[in-house]
Image (cartoon, rainbow, N blue to C red; front, top):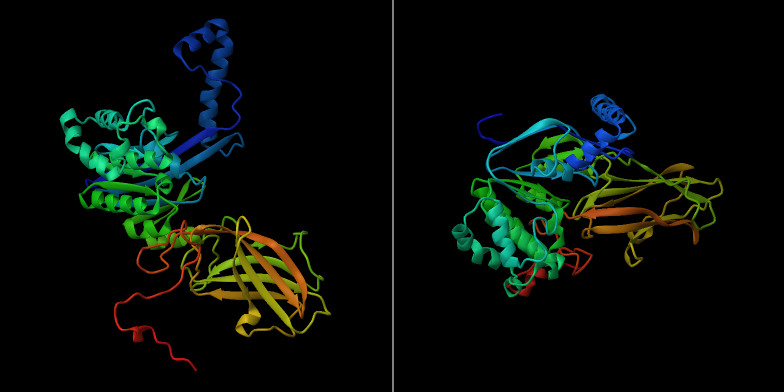
Length: 438
């Protein structure tokens, strides 16, 4: 561990038993009762557990699940470390170990200084206490004296924007109010290490921006921040470094742009086979067989898309010998409740395919993907002349995450609109926006 390192993680692993039938005693009294009632059975069972735990740590038994495995890294003072990965990658488990909520199965963690964590909405709050009382309780648990808490109280309440409800029991708070107060408390108690999970997604866009600014201030003050988020734009602009977890293992530890690129290109799903889909319409003269998304710059596969990304949609197909010589390819994107957002057909851009081979791919390049974060469905269609040859709705789901569409760090606000569009604002004469028409 270097002298400047605030956090050192060495070969960290966390293992869980799957379907463990034998219930272990929860209290000392239960353990004594089990021993007295069946001493040989107790010893056989629990010595067996100890042996089994050692064995499975060195094996891949189907009865265990490794949430983390052999994870090592260091975080220096003042660093903002982003931790990214898909659901189930081990991010929350890692934060719980760093926050001392759970113990690792193997490896060790060394942390210098006081840690404050914001992992779940309402964590550490007593529902029957008021917001004000919970502020004092949380601060006291972190070792602050009452006069120190009183000095920061107005600042915490002002930041959380819940002054009107500060003397109301928190069990009556909405999830957004919980989040505001919890973050305000966590960020203003001057921890040496601040750990923030995706819980900020509960808040509205303006408050999220406020929280990101506060985390930046915390880091500039020489403190360390660990930030877990699916907001890639926030990770890229806030963090000085990022690690990527895949199935419990660290696969990348690099600057945010490199880590995000690796995360977006993660080959966990690979190319999606469409040929086996039976719920489709059309005369069958052309049929979709596969679909994948690639990065326009390097051709690497993409399983997740960010707003503003330059991507290629690639549709594999097969064609019957008698197909028409005028083929049109198209796709549309809808919300997951069926609201149409985009329709793009090859003939819209003047492209009609003729004399196509019996097997191949249609590719559509999108220089800047225009949708905000969310889950969408892609619908694909091939026209054989004026007839539908193959129509699959939906073809595949599409997951979009926040990106830097505008090049300013602003990712748009999904609650106000689903589409992003280029535009320039000015107070100059209107000839700024004049366009030369042919």
